[in-house]
Image 1: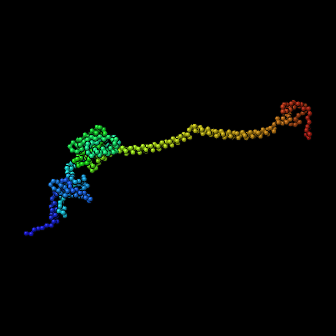
Image 2: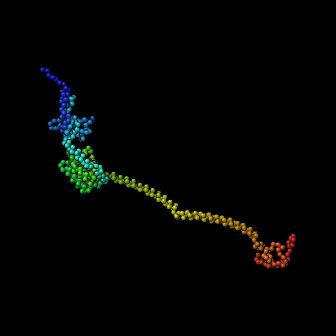
Image 3: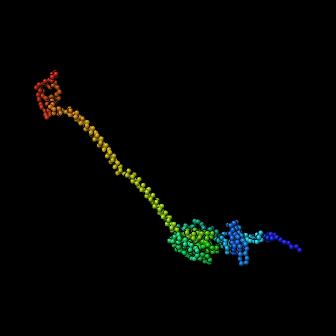
Amino acid sequence: MMKHVYSVGQVNKYIKNMFAQDFMLHHISIKGEVSNCKYHSSGHIYFTMKDADGTVNAIMFAGNRREGLKFQMKEGDRVVVTGSVEVYERDGRYQIYARTIERDGEGNLYLKFEALKRELEEMGMFAEEYKQPIPTYAKTVGIVTAETGAAIQDIRNIAGRRNPYVQLILCPALVQGEGAAASIVHGIHALEQIGVDVIIVGRGGGSIEDLWAFNEEMVARAIFDCRIPVISAVGHQTDFTIADYVADLRAPTPSAAAELAVFDYRQAMQELLGMRQQMDKELQRKVTVARNHLEHQRMRLHYLSPQQRMNENRRRVAEYEEKLTGRMEELLRERRHRLALLAGTLESYSPVKKLSGGYAFVEDGNHQALRSIHQIREKDTVQIHLLDGTLTAAVTEIQAAEGVKNE
């Protein structure tokens, strides 16, 4: 009897077809510990899943990473991989092609997280209108976190560097495990009673189980009801909790929360100095403008003042007075000169001058001046006026001048 012999490729193909016909292997979830994890430059992830009883190779293609992997998978993580188990025909080896990868135990917690998130969001607890502003210059900062751990040390270091004058008040709390949520709520209420300016609630990163206390409804309600602004600082940048959505402000890390809550003293002093310089400059500008305005008003008042107008009128009157005086003196000089001329002329006709020269003025009895012998007869009385007196005489003889006919 002749045996039927198959090639390696035929066997591998046969086994591949057998796997393909098993519908359970098309959508299967396998849990185990990650080992030999390698992130390829192409974006694919190659790793091995193992437990106490065996190992299985796994690969997640780059196209599935965005939706299928929500954390940075690393060596030693316990995960649940969901995908299909298939045979790689060329090598004759089977492996699971991962579509989603979750941390072991996260599946139910994630569903619980999503349900609570939807419920609180529908109640309006994430709404922006309920968010309180974080004070710019907080004097007291309350902190709800573990007494020992990196979170409180990071906050202290950052706060001390930024502003050593801000008071930090730690209310120690459990941040994971049984009783953690109640402990966090107690810390928030205690700091609210003290009356700090802002509260930081947080811890370092971890798995969803480690961070679960910050996904509890009682913690969310305590943050929402708190009258003091609350900054959540839970985990690393990629981690989100219900507390992050409810808080007035979310910080990606405790260090970032300290930077948001504690103002930088040196920067504030620089800003104050800059504002002071700007105010001094603006004040100087306004003083200069006011002085210029005042000088303008002073000059205007000086120009429009009654005293100024009186002074101007006085100057104008003085000028008129000088002109009038000058004109009067000029007229007087002219009149004096004219008077002198008239006086000279008058003097030449003055009877006094003639009388002083030995002449006399003769009048008849009717006080008519005698200019001719024909105006008088013998025995008429005449008045002879001399320089120093008057004579009364009787005419005894009338004699005509030579060449003049006596009528």
